[in-house]
Amino acid sequence: MICNVGEDVVEVQYDDCQRAQLTSAQLRPLQVGIGSRVYVRWKGGPSYYPGRITMAEGGAVHVEYDDGDKEWATVSAMRVHNDDL
Image (cartoon, rainbow, N blue to C red; front, side, top):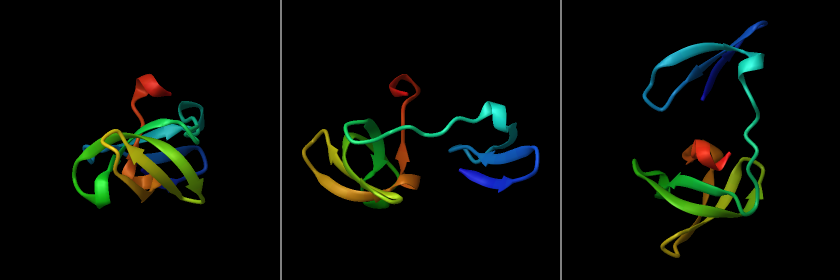
């Protein structure tokens, strides 16, 4: 999560709550879209489940989970595995 944007650095917070300051050269945009494999917190709960994005609208994505469940979720509840980038 991006916490603060300065002139030369961006402060980010990782899933384990640690923070770091990165330069813009160290950042890259999240490039996911329809068909991308993702991990999302079902109904905003604590656990992430695998699925695929089926629709996107603004800051929300519609996810079809591997078990067949479907829901709209926020991008902030989504994670992308490094191998899937």
